[in-house]
Length: 264
Image 1: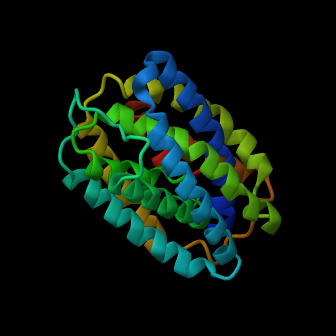
Image 2: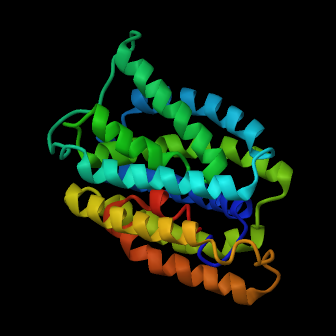
């Protein structure tokens, strides 16, 4: 939605309900393919950290203007794109798992969840854009499909909690959410099945290219200062077109919750 000129906070607030829906459908679909795709212990630790991060992010949101948020988001995306391409290739037969006893790995995962919670509120990315590359580094041998699915399961509660401050600020465009939801559902189902068969490297390369596109849009910022809130169907239709253009990438690699949030 930044592409069609929504103010940053409204773009973030409107993206989160769509992220919740896409993530829910994606988790159900990926579990239908293979119930071992989601590592629930890792998801639980990530969620615990994300809840704290979301609370702090909500307190910061009302005090930070749009421009610093856009620049911060662009910087985060550059780092994420580099990490996704540079991280070691995920294994095909590794395991994504932690024990129940407190360990250093659990502390690291808790920290990842915390950062994901903060960025979810401030940037509307559902946390996935932080979780996936971070888990690829912490668990380099884990299959990409397990990392993607576990991240997706964490995104649901994180995004739900992140909705609260945006609902209070009135930065959710409900009409646009209804328009974007059907496209997101189709992408979620397609991506959930594709992630089990498409190699991880093409997914990383495609996502890196997408990141470059979004960063350029953020830094140009040639419309955000002048475009008003959506008041007619024409601008909403443009947003739907942008979502449709992102659909093939989302269906290919099951990183739709990472890719669509900046646009939707």
